[in-house]
Each structure stands twice: as C-alpha cells, then as structure tokens.
Image 1 (tube, rainbow, N blue to C red):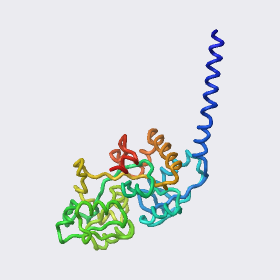
Image 2 (image 1 turned 120 degrees about the horizontal axis):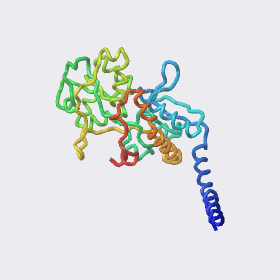
Image 3 (image 1 turned 135 degrees about the vertical axis):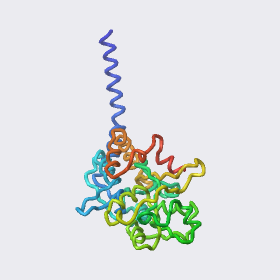
Length: 289
C-alpha cells in the first residue's frame, strides 16, 4: 500500500513537471531571445554617462548591466543622445530600452512603457556659493523680478517649476545638463533646477562645487492631494510592443532589490536610503499619479 501510494505521488510529481516545462521554456525563450540590446542614454551623471576611460557608468547603467547579465544578454550597446531625443529615439526603434534618469510621468506613460522605478529623487536648485540672492523656493521665481531660473529642455524638473507657478518668461530652458549648468556658471540665470541626484553629481566636480551650492532649505512643487513634496520616480523606458522585455526586467529588478544589489549600486553614486523605492510603488502606480 505504501509503495503504491509512493508510486502515485512520484507519478503526480513527474506529470506536474511535464506540464510546467513548457511554461519554463517559454520564460527562458523570453529572457534569452537576444544576446545584445541597445540602450539610449543622455550622458548625465549620476544616471548613465561615458567616463573619461571610455566606460559607461552610472546608477542606471550599472542596474542595466546587473539585470541583463541575469537574462544572459552578453552585449549592451550604449548610444548617447540629448535627453529630449531619447524617448523619440526609442519610439523610432533606435533603442531597445532607455535608462538615463527618466522620470515616470502620466504623460510619458501614454507614449511608452516604463519598467518599475529604480530610485526616487526630489527636485533641487543650484545657486551661487553662499546663495547671495537668498533663493529657497520655486515661488520666489514667480514673484521676484530680479531672478531667473534655468532648466534642461524636456526635463520633468523644468515642468515641475512651471506647474509650481514659475512663468515661462522666468524659466530659461537649455539643451541638456551641461549647457544648463554652464549658463549658471556664466551668470545668465540665478538658479538651475535638477533632480537632487543630478545636482549632487554636478557639485562633486571641483570646478562646479567651488562656485555653486544647493539651495537649502528648498521648497519645490507640492502634491495638492497629499500636501507633500512631489517625488520623482526614475525608471527604464520600453516600447509598448516589447512587454516581454519590460516584464523580464521587472522580475530581475525585484530580485536585485531584494538581495540588496540595487541599494549598493545607488549608494555607490551618492543616493541615500530615503531615495530607495518604497514598497508598493510600481510603474503602474507612478503612471496613475
């Protein structure tokens, strides 16, 4: 009787493995369908940038490597472009994925799919050393005639400034991060807005850190529903016709988050524990906000 029972159990286990095998093979085919991908980046520290040694580094670049290594993708081709050209380039099939400090927003979610967010960031403003014009909020640019704000064209931070009440006439937008901070150094504007992560990375450069600083305290855009500062969630971007790639990324990102890899990568580039993604925040929830 016991042998018969054991035989039945063994049969059931074998049958279950046979049934499950096609699903496992389908999953493997999804993750191993290609051995190379093309990633669009904006050459922006600390997100994804080509360093002086020719290597692509940054928070997003390191996470991309960690994820796709687990998916057996052997070659990652990075293509550098202006930030504003990345999503159009993705849609036109120049890239398989974009991951370079792109904030998840409802408007962008209508055009493309996002993977789950990797880190969060608040807005920050860089001002001249010692903050001689005493700038501490977006609202000051709206009400004062003696100061001008700068931002990068297409960035969510520039959009946040406008939403917070800064008139378009008081916001000068530049091509990219480098041209924006150059305008600040040339005193063409009195403050420039970036994510906190980008601002910290810029200040780590001696020629910038010697002349600029973070406006502190700083009051940015507030969420009228919660009464709290608006948080930007940064994540990878995929075409809407590649859900298999997005889903495979999300699965590996969850595992790398759980084992602490994402946090280690983030800390390497100056991100704090407070900027890690809270439990329950996903691309879907960020797109719905």
